[in-house]
Length: 201
Image (cartoon, rainbow, N blue to C red; front, side):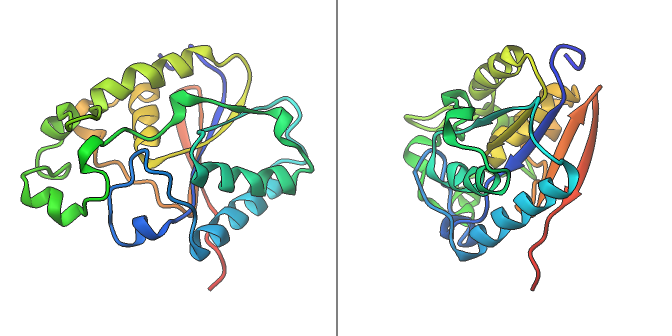
């Protein structure tokens, strides 16, 4: 589907305390921590070095607090306001149901490991939640709805699904794709380009 949608810049939200403690957030609405705010600020500054303005771009964000806080730095940096931002439910993080709040070591102890069994993890649906396969349908619907170059701020799981769809990746590769919170990427014509925005130490 690489020729079916416009240029896309994808930004993962900054760090939260749950990211730091390797705890599954899913759709639990956790805010950015101090490091996350610094990462979001650095991303906005990096975007400002790449673009004189965001005229011609549509801006989309997940409704959860952490991506909206991240987007706020872009809004402020480019002198925009929230009337120009589309808040899209389809960009919410995967719903991990009764596993939200669990740590990765706890999930691994239950036999859930995207590194060791990526296809099984992709298909796994937690109680009250959704699988990567489930969430792919809403992400595909979102991608199909794009009509102009777009900047999106969302989540790690959504980032993996987007890359899987756009780059036609095998299912086995998708759950373990990396997306550091100090890097963001551009997808265009079936190619991916990464940009660094690491805050100063």
